[in-house]
Length: 415
Image (cartoon, rainbow, N blue to C red):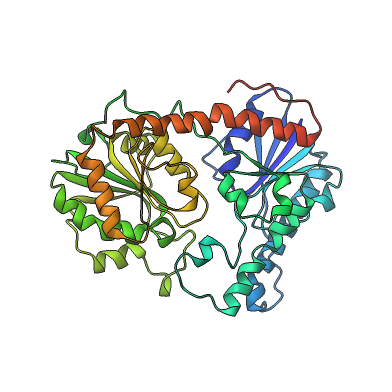
């Protein structure tokens, strides 16, 4: 089978599918991407780079900026696909991430090729996400928000089938498209993300260069791609003084980059980390910003975590949240829609008020004080991932949906 994957970033959500098909016999796999990550090589997978069209048309109408960017991405991928077609590559199925616009015109190049779309989010003026901060949106902001769905709606109509990671994310899309959207998570490698042999990894065995955990007896952990409001970084940081005061042997590890991925940007592209440091006094000898970590060290952080904090707006669920559960972390999660789909309070984790640093601190302190009594939460957390999000269950579903969309028989899988 000939398969064309396309995602702005390589390999992102398509990693497991592309890796499996690249290794398996009888498949030709091409991955069209804007950001190829040259250091990441997948046997049997050919990377093909597209560039959004950069034709200068003068200043765009401000409210149409996202739409114009989507069109530029779509035209850029058309050019790459025409080149692939001229070289004799006509895919049996295209698997593409919807949202940036590059998949909008696929049917014009490959009219007879089925399209399996990956749909993460649908933007609505009345959604929990939009209303979460209680700040009224201006007319222009609402127009811009609705226009962000232009490419997504185009793909919802043109796709033959779709994937969305969670039921809560499916709920955000218009109901008339739900029958197209198959709810299956990308999958967590539960053989890799495991607890540390039934006991917490001692803090002094977490090997992070230039991080001094001397004297640390328990670790509070927080992991996010970016330190920003959408992932509750300000509220978490405001909770730290109370946590550190009540737990004098506690250290905090904050994993991720000082950047904004989803949230509104500060003036002059300012840093939320620096903003919080300037407004909240903490013992900086016990609060450590690690930056991004290699997978092995990141796993050590989760295995050593006495309490792992995951906060999010009502938005796309993070992989890190499920990886923490898979490692048997005692998770303190925000009482928001995407987290409630997975966490049941005091059964496989603890839920807390996203907006209240005081309640976040209280929940974390409770988790630290009652480690022995709450061991069942760790066990149940991992079982939750094994039951629903395990790669060995999710990957076959994805591959069989891909084959079904392509009009092929099911792919035999034994991941």
